[in-house]
Amino acid sequence: GESVGLHLPTLSVQEGDNSIINCAYSNSASDYFIWYKQESGKGPQFIIDIRSNMDKRQGQRVTVLLNKTVKHLSLQIAATQPGDSAVYFCAENMANTGKLIFGQGTTLQVKP
Amino acid sequence: NAGVMQNPRHLVRRRGQEARLRCSPMKGHSHVYWYRQLPEEGLKFMVYLQKENIIDESGMPKERFSAEFPKEGPSILRIQQVVRGDSAAYFCASSPPQGSYGYTFGSGTRLTVV
Image (cartoon, chains in turn cyan, red):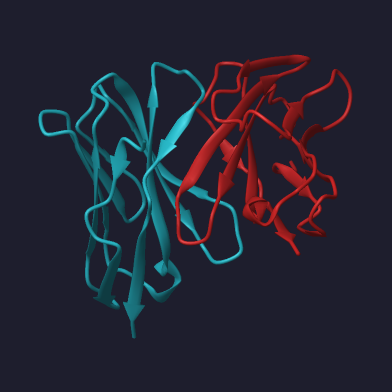
């Protein structure tokens, strides 16, 4: 079964607010984590990644936090925009095996 | 620099027919991965290939499904004698020789079995 799961299936936020999407994983051997954005009818698009030797990584408007103690991953999106509306997936990889394990996804809805 | 190219984008097959899905990796990428996505679900790993080699096929159904990545040409995911339950989006990804870092997905093939 899946070892990666998301706490909330749908997140609705106001344009301009910050968004936080959460993810739990169960495989303590996983050493690489990725967040993907998927828009309707398209393939997953890489947002940001983090390796297990880090606990925080920042990109443009996005931050990923990794808490290995409780096996929790989160994606923070600052100043959420309508174009951020999509399904967001976290994925984990164990020791560069090549195989990614995906969570079920969180739908982010941005209200104007 | 073209990304991962998949074709066809949409494929309709009748039950019992064969489906062939193609994937051309990004230039310089030598690893190819296939994933399946059912509606409202996450992606599920199927198979991991390098040129002329299957590295991990732990996610492939035991029957009717096969994959190859020949020395020349695209990777092919082949589904024989399709059934309605095979209807899904099939995504291909590729990565550089160092493995899963730098994974890039294609736009997928949406297979509908009627």
